[in-house]
Amino acid sequence: VVDANGCPKDPTWQINAVRVTHDPVRRRITYRGARLNLFGTPVLALPTFSHPDGSRTGASGFLVPDLRFGGRNGVELSAPYYIRLAPNRDVTITPFLYTEVLPMVSGEFRHLTRRGAYQLRGYITYGSRIQTDAAGVPLPGEREGVRAYVEGNGRFQLSRDWSVTGSARYVTDRTFLRRYDISLDDRLRSVVNAERIRPDSYIS
Image (cartoon, rainbow, N blue to C red):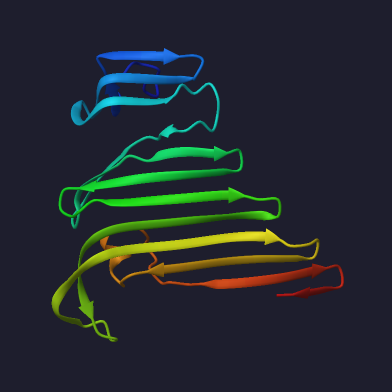
């Protein structure tokens, strides 16, 4: 790890381990007795851990972890795991750990087909939420249960002239997206658009 002038510097994050093994056949690097260090401080123990060695693209394994701090949820640590199902399909599963609220899990599925592509993404956790009336005024008491957000979008070329684009979203409660900083825009929109483009006409 070097700086802009090419001089060595301490990395922002690193994995230290008692033993590191490179398997050139499986193209994986395996760690035993490892720990993840951020800014020189151990933050997560990894008794067994492995990842692709980088010699080929699209291999399954852990992606770079992310560490954040927020006023509502405290310290947030996420460690995404990428699964390559096929050359045209993959899944990413990400657990989120917080110091102030219960953990959350997200999943994202992407699929490239012969006629187009689509992706599905969702977040799920368990917690309490304050009920509001139609005007957004908080009601007394809290209610516990599953909190989730699901979205999907895609585009398909049905024929030479016709294409369809769509997106759909669903959330269990109004404050979920803001509570977990999932999106800056929490307005739910579900739309479908069909287009027909020809040299002499356009229909949408």
